[in-house]
Image (cartoon, rainbow, N blue to C red):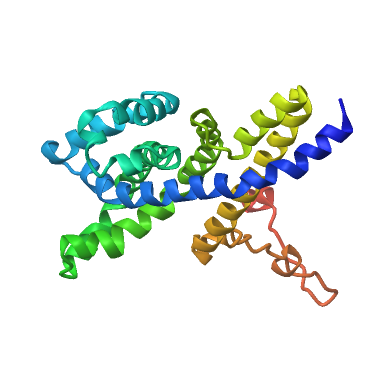
Length: 263
């Protein structure tokens, strides 16, 4: 392994870090905004509301993200209706194609994550909100959604990490994010080990920062009472419970059973 090439990779790859972060977190933000109403529809007991959302999440969660990216980038742009409309100004740019594909995929996964959190909200909380006279929208906004978000936070952290790693697929449609720059550098130096080890180190560092951030957030959102250690049972001082025998204690006379019988 060449130290010079590894050092060059460590200096070159951060140029694609900004594009990686923008693509990742912009897709996550848009996908989260789409998934919130879809999650409530998915958790609804009405099949007419939940079935279309189920079909959407099943399709996007059941197919590879790379296939979805190729369908958006290569497929939609071939439609005459798209080429002859204002959509072509968006669909001809690889960044927007990657953004659309990542957003739809992230929204499908986040919908199911939030749906599990909504269904895990204690029923008593919903009944208490109804007893206070809150409407369905107020109950969902002030009661169900905050509790569901707290419950689903660990699973959503996995979605964020997964989207960060999936952003490397953007290099297949000519975007020069970190993986795209790594592939370009490999084609110039013919040293895949040094370059991709450096790229993997950057992704590993970003993953570590994201997981630590979610752990801090989860600790902050956890109620204070649940973070306290369990109370230890009081240890009784047995020396205080047993009376001390002193010299002034009068002896206790126990009558003999044989003598009582003879009497």
